[in-house]
Length: 194
Ligand code: UDP
Image 1 (tube, rainbow, N blue to C red):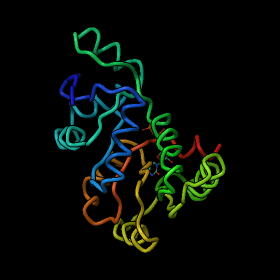
Image 2: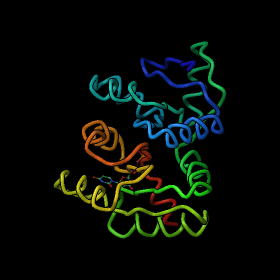
Image 3: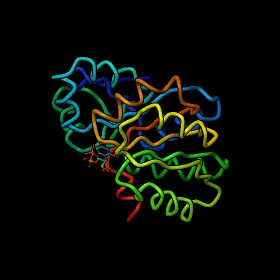
């Protein structure tokens, strides 16, 4: 896949539609991986945290969240087709998953928010299966891993803990969670909860 480097972060040069298609093909093939959606603040965090930079650059999809990344690409002479906001990618992925009755687990935000977000997404996209939810203010990571697995796992897991916590959670636990595609989506659950 063609990439554009912005201060060391290797963004994938894909449109939102292509990103959703790629994500769906990974879900269908049960090919484990994760999606990150860096904005300029996250690029800056990466520059100051080599571990975080490594995690971001190992993602299956690195999507440019925000016009700042697109402008930076232009100035640096790197080609990116356009911005792919995480929240829009997430919503379109839910729509595509719903058509194939795929399972979604929502992790993050304050207690009660993920449940509300899940109910709203399922109402909007009939066919989508809510595998389960968990709030983002936990002390025991293993308990969260166990909760997702006890729920029967999921095709996609939206991890919404803010950056860099969510990406570090994914990198540390992806192998232990019964799930295919893990998406770090910041404050998306608050938006989906309305
Ligand atoms: N959050 C969480 N656990 C934490 C810290 C934050 O679940 O320990 C949630 C917070 O409630 C919010 C999201 O993570 O829903 C972060 O949202 P923010 O808009 O700050 O993230 P961004 O989209 O800017 O990365």
